[in-house]
Structures are given as C-alpha cells and as structure tokens.
Image (cartoon, rainbow, N blue to C red; front, side, top):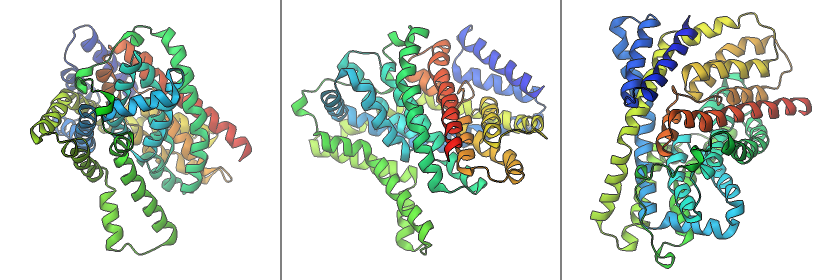
Length: 449
C-alpha cells in the first residue's frame, strides 16, 4: 500500500501540473498533504513534516544556490563566461564541444555538490550554446551526466563517503574504482545518449532554455572581456578551495596528524557555504572592481541573479517537503521488509535497494545512506565481497530515475524550459541510463578485481 500511495501521488502531481497548469510549488504542497494523510501521518505532525522537509532541503541548497547564481551572473555580465565559451570553442571546435563540456563538468563535479556545479556551469553552457547557435540541451545532457556520475560514485560527495564508511570500504579504492567505472559511464550516458535522445524527444532539442534564470547576457567584444586565465580561475575557485580542503583532510586522516588550529581554518574554508562566499567576493573583484564596474552595477547583477531563482527555490523546497513526507510515512521501512531473507549478490542487491529507495524517496544521498543500513547484515554473511564495488553499486542505484520528488528534476525543468514530458524523457531517462550503465561497469569490474 505505501508504494501504491506514492504512485498515486506522483500521478496526481503530474495531473495538477500538466492538465490544470497549476503552479509547481503549489502542486507539490497539495500532493505532500494528500500523501501524508494517506500514509497515516498524524494530523498534528503533517505540517511539521512538511516544514522539516522544506527547511532541510533549502538549508543545504539555498545559500549555495544563491551565491552560485550570483557568481555565475557576475561572470556572465563581465564577459568571463563568454571568454571561456569562445576559448573552448576555439580549442575543441563545434564538432567536439560536448567532450570539452564533459571534461570540464567532470573536473568541477569531483569536488563540488551537484547543485553547486550546476549553477556554476549553466551560464557557461548557455553562452557556448549561444555562440555555436545550438540548443542548450545538446550540451546540458553531457554536463548533467558528468555532474551526476561524480555525485553518485566519487568521494568526497556525501553519499559515497558515508556509504564507504558504513561498509568499512577503503576510500582510496572507492575513488580509484569509481573513476574507472565513471569514465565509460559518463561517455555513454552523456555523449551517446544525447544522440539517441534527440530522436526520442525532438521538441526538447528545439528549445532555447529559460534565459531569464541566468539573465540576458549582453554581447561584449572579445578583446574587452576578461582574460581566459582569470575567467576560469573565477569560475573554478570554489572547486579549488573545496578540493584543497578535501586533500588536506585526507592527508590528516592517513597520517593521523592532530587537528590543530591551521587544520580547523582549512576545514572551515572548505565548507561549501564559506567556499562559495569567498568565491563570490573574489568574483566581485575580478569581474567587477578590477574591470572598473560600479558597485551599483555589481549589486544589480547579484540582485537580478537572486530574484531569478526565487520561484525555483520554492519549487525545490516543495520537492523536499514531498520527500520528507515519504520518509516520515514509512515508505523506506516498508521497502526494507520486502528484501528480508532474500539471497542475492550483495552488489546487485545494493543497487536494487538503492534504486527503489531513490525512486520512492527522491534524494540520492538519502537513498544511498538508507541502503547501507539494509545491506550491512548481508555483507556480514557474505565473506570475500568487494566492499568498494558494493559502495559504488549503492551509489549507482541511488542515481536512477530522478523524477518529481527530486529537487534536481525541477531545476532542470525550469532552466531548460521543459514541460513534464520533456523533463522525463531527457533528465529522468538519462539518469536511468547512467545508473544501469554504471551497474554494468561495476559488474564487469567485479570479474577482474
């Protein structure tokens, strides 16, 4: 019954948005209340459940998302994004630009939360698409595939890191095997899938995207734009800060050095919120003050960026409320009972459970972490299993079928100006292909390692 209620809730949500054209945020709230009632959450707890879901989701995303949008807007308004786009076009050419996008997105994605990488890369993607006179989704799918595969497979992202610790898997092996599995996975789901998907949903590949989300970027003569080096440094500074902090943390764990004051400062700077704030201040200087742009214009760029993402933040919060209702309603516990006493390969079982939880709960991280608790008893009864591969299989399963209860679904829908069908047939389908291909790569690796 819980899974049936979830299915009815998803159908109701699609119906409200697609048929009645009701605002997405309002639709998510209505469905959250309805599902809460059908799952038996006490009346006195429903509102607090919804508030908790919105708060926990936006608490993680809002600061990062807002600062990232401002940084991206400053980069775009000053011509930095244009300079990066033109340099990549010159180096790779139109024919191979998707490969440039995948490489850049993979590097960004290793050290960054999915949402941070998304808001940093989207202005550049739109700029490149505009320069090459192609539709943004042609570059969007490779970018999304690279960001998703790093989010699901590679430490220091929260899912793989926590799962590895739960399974007592070597973080170094998880990272090594993860990169090996991620490379062919992102090529297949990012490059090859794009060609196939263009035939499946041609309407999505005819859209220009929602430029209002990042603002109209004015054309600036190339010789008046910031240099490529300072532009790429401004865009990549959050990556550099986060990656540096991660490397220091890994060295500290390996060597066992005492966490002194210097380490605490580095750890503080490596917090995603702090890194984004420092990066924004750096962008204010490199893309504003240094270029003799007035503080009024700099403030206007930041204000425009913030106002443009206001509705999206509400939608993301609504998705978080829906997710929390499913969790508090016991959907995850119900799924756990379905696998009691099942005899199956731990790698495959980890992927299946994570996939079901991801579809039911929405959050890839929640699905991955919840799966660990269900699989650990099986690992104890299955000696010799490769724990690093079980970790990766859990991550791969948690990436599958992102749909209406996942905040990322609404981010992609709004930015690329898709309707529900187009979002399902691009983002949802791509995440599913990525998850299945990732499992296949892991199963092949299991034969040799």
